[in-house]
Amino acid sequence: MYTDKVMDHFRKPRNVGEVENADGVGEVGNPTCGDMMKITIKVEGGRIADIKFKTLGCGAAIATSSITTELAMGKTLDEALAITRDQVAKELGGLPANKMHCSNLAADGLHKAIEDYRSKKKGT
Image (tube, rainbow, N blue to C red; front, side, top):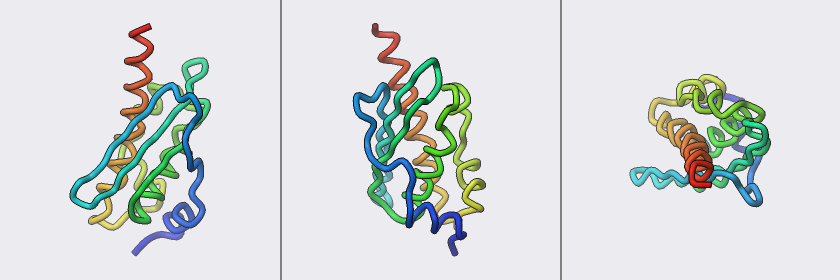
């Protein structure tokens, strides 16, 4: 059902919490399954210097949130925007078809955090 890597990220998620004084916040949810995700980022020199998540959801939602933060850490904003749900699932060694929407949420949350950062920056 789940790969060892999914289970590892579920049991020992990386980057859990909230970035203090975050530069960007992305909140997403799926009303069908009830998963809720919040991703916060700190940007320095055009790169993601810190990223954390809070997820209320199934094991796959937690694992995809965790791996997404690892994939995005240190990347430029454009590189992080290029992270896709398929890439998230592939990085975890695959997800069951009925859990693919979880990887979609994680990538969407990251993208929303970057969009939030950019919209705040335009306003200043």
